Image (cartoon, rainbow, N blue to C red; front, side, top):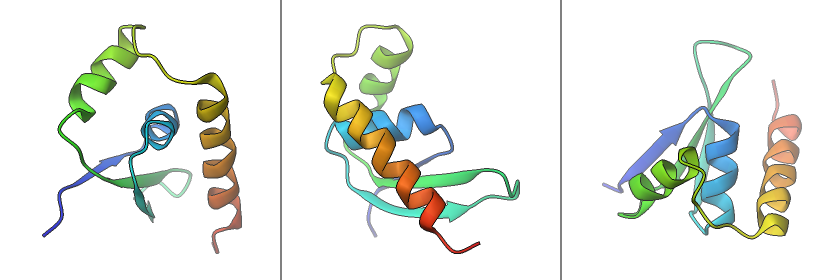
Length: 80
């Protein structure tokens, strides 16, 4: 079984996508206004998220913005 990581945080999902984590799926949650982003997990994920919240993560600004745009396109193109 694959090691997966799920988050409902759009910012964390954008970060992971920008850092090269593979998005496996976007799943519904009990709250119809939210979705869960499912990624293949990597050992560096925990430190990456910690660094993000501490304001010390380094990410290419264009890649981060492109990741946000890509996720939004996926969210809004999904059947309801």
